[in-house]
Length: 260
Image 1 (tube, one colour):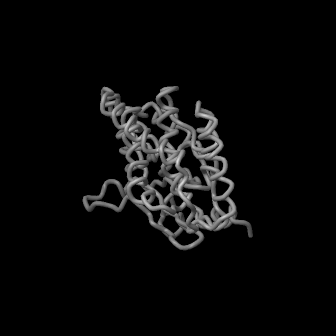
Image 2: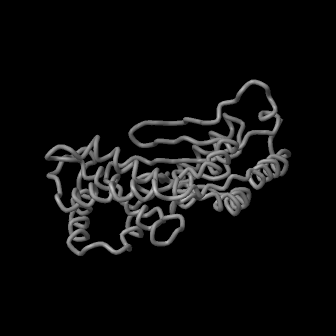
Image 3: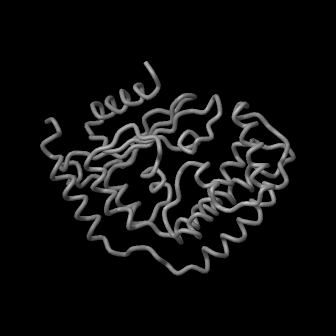
């Protein structure tokens, strides 16, 4: 059995044991970015919905399913209600899931959801998320003389996403290669290409010498995008009506599909 079929089978198992419907399931992380190492795990993220009666209970229901975490799989999902609330907040991670190039399952319901939910993308919130991710990676992992090269990607990719948002005012692509299409110096591009070649042939925990050109770019761009994010006006969509309507319509349309 190949990995894709194994993941699909696990999604079916989740549906049966949790009594939910998986509306959407994708790869997240390095494999979705196109920069996985030989020992990279599979970061599977999914959105699910429960029967309508579960949302009418007074007792609060869990809104996350954490299914598997080991050396091969990292699988967890969000409930539809949580997902829609996070869309309203402009959650940048959720928009990445929605645009993953590796899709294990999708449905007409998910297409309907994202048709309207994508209008809740916020440039300001996304910039805060991405420069914050890069800054956290820099401080935690890129201070020593030798570093994990996957952490360079964890810092570079969000900064390139910031650049894409600044240039296009749209949701950035997920693949690292697509983000590299923005204008970068030849010197920086060459060093990134060298880093990617070394990383692709190494285990994720292998340490390598710092790359000064990449390091300098990361440090400078973090400062730049922090300032830009702080200077932007709040562009979040305040209205809940579209998301409320989506929630009710999905619950109603799927009610008969759940077994008693």
